[in-house]
Every structure is written in structure tokens, then in C-alpha cells.
Length: 263
Picture 1 (cartoon, rainbow, N blue to C red):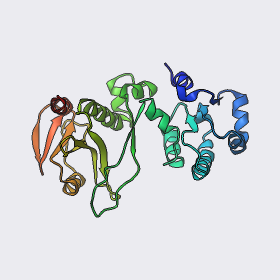
Picture 2: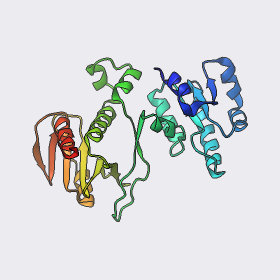
Picture 3: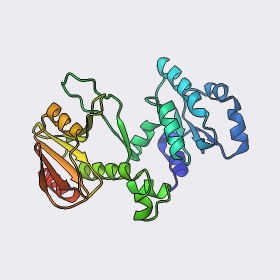
Picture 4: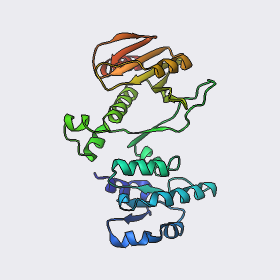
């Protein structure tokens, strides 16, 4: 099922206004985008092929801010299209913290919104969530990455691996496990923090290569968090210590350990 069909048939889209920007008539309606969209408040507006009108992101930013301040519900815009890296960067910068359609993607289980870990440390922490497409195979298909060589040569490779690791581990984790990430304003970071049943805290850093290195920022983050266990997940299978209480471990091995805890 394509993204457009999925969006138009989901329950949240009933009665929505649908604009296809490959249709010249719909594109013309948005020549005065603010005026047109501002007259259609209160319901969901689906804008397909949004990459044909990149100026819309700035308009939507203003409209979303105004509606939030007016106390209107979130989720009034769903944007679809063929996203280039430039378009993704522009949309993330223009709509940072305002992407109302993200709620729908989360509800449809297409996207995972990973919240920041709230730690009692005397440091300025990043408060914005990290967002992952939950099905890495879907990402590869949309980007036309047909084989491993295509994937490894693409800038999305690292984020794809990170998202795949997170989804695999969370599927294996026990019920009531809380997942987040830790990052300070200076870039000290742990990719995945698991709060497991029994008040157990695990810190997990994710590396794509076969010979992972422990970065100074990870050591600092572990000093901040004091987790029970710290793991460096990498693309190999061997499990071995890396110092500073950190173990290198393959994805399969860590997923098995979490699954054993579940039951």
C-alpha cells in the first residue's frame, strides 16, 4: 500500500481536505497558501507531493504556531511527498517542534518518537525527541536502495542501522520498559537508554562498523547516568569488554539477553 493510499484510508483522514500538488488546479489553490489554508481550519488537510511547493514549510510554520496559541488541536496537516535530503533538511528546520502530522505517523506505527531521558544532572539537556522510521526496509525502498552497496554508499546508512537496532531491541525488551536517549547541549550522548522493570537502567550506544570505538562523549554520559549496564552494539557477533564498564556486543546477542529477561 502506498503512502497516499494509507493516509487517505486511515480513520483520522475521514472528511479531510486532500490537495495533490501534481494537479495544477490544486497547486494554484496554494498560490496564496496562507489565505487558502487559514480559511479551512479545524480539520485535517492532506498535502501530497509537497516537494513541489517547498515555500509551504515557512507558511505552515506560522499557521501551526498561531493555531497552537489559539488552543486548537494538533494534527491538522499531513504532508506527503518524495523527500530529497534537501527537502528533509528544510522541513525539519522550518517545522522543528511544530510537525503536527507527526502524531498521525506515530499513531500509524510508521514512526517512533524517542523522548529525551530526564536526568537529575547539572547540565543543559536536549529536550526535543528523536524521530525514526520504524521499518528500515521501507526507508530503503523509498530511497531506491536495492542492495547493500547502494545502502552503504548512502548518507542514510547510519540512521537506518540505528533505527533498526532500536526497533529490534525494543521488540525484545520486557513489558513496561521505557526507552529514551540522553544528550546534553554540548553533544554528550547515549543513543538508547532503557529503564527496565526493577529500576534497572541500561545505556546503549550504537555503532555501524565492525570495530567500534568508545568516544569520550560516551564515557562522560555514563558518568552522568550511572547505568547498571553499558553496551556498545556493533555489526559483529563477539562480546568483549571495552573498558569503563562498557561491553561491545552484537545486536543478536543483546536482543537475546533482553528477550530472556522478558520471559
